[in-house]
Image (cartoon, rainbow, N blue to C red; front, side):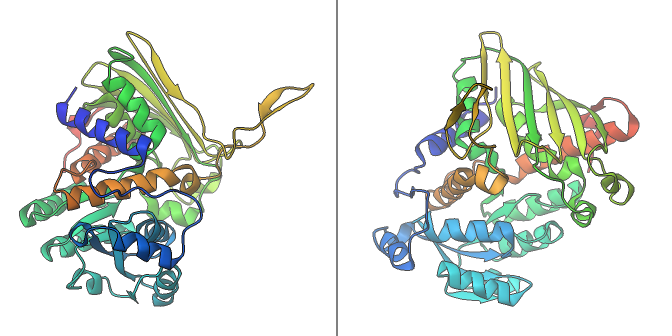
Length: 388
């Protein structure tokens, strides 16, 4: 078990279970976002040297999640500008979250003299060029996955980032979810002994449109890549072999027009001898399905789905939850989005390693490409076969 990964796992667990970061009192309660005056009050209580001034590229769904988090839930961050291809969207988002400036050109964020860190929340095909531009301008970078669309491009990006001496974190938010972080901590603490097997279940409530599938890179690169990262995070070592099965069982158009699958089962083998399965589907009638189990020489750790409430109904028919699981990832991982933001700001402000780097993103991308190759060729694929 790699010491660096153990250390980062412990850090992630502390962040997720206490929702607090070192030093600056970064935690803020979830719930209704406070007014702008409340946010300014929080900022005024922080040391000026501990406030990270940031810009956001992209005001789509995930960009707005990060804008709200930066504006209201991380007192040690101050968003100064948000830009989007559609300037009216950037302008309305800026007004909603009290961000002083907006625009349509990402270079306005990159060249802004007061911005110290950039949040890249744009379409995947633009990530590499925007990261490189930000790094060359001396800005730290927080990037939504993927880092780039090809492995060779990832290597080029990482070389620039390292040469420029800036920090870059990839947004694998599940590492910062309280359930995932606590389960990982149990493994690190030896509760399960030597991990033998694991099961990861990740199913979306409804399939995306074909137009999305065509631009997504496929189920393994778009959806399962989060599970591949989590498997690596939990095992604390590298994946060595991938075997994938898949089919189009939910929406025939995903196959006929999108050239993809919507249902998959992937087996992963790791350096520590453990192996397990990742179960993905684009549709889950019971809601957003996120479950994990790890079994080892001393025992087992697991968690089930999160629900809007803990209320149970008991009657003559059955005992059951009053609610379905959370409807999708934005609500299910609301706490994780806050915790990952706090973690990155903390790493920049205090000059500590980022908890999820571009190299973590590369490792997950290798696993995704191995899964696709296995599916296409009908055989197990060693991750060593995947080259840039």
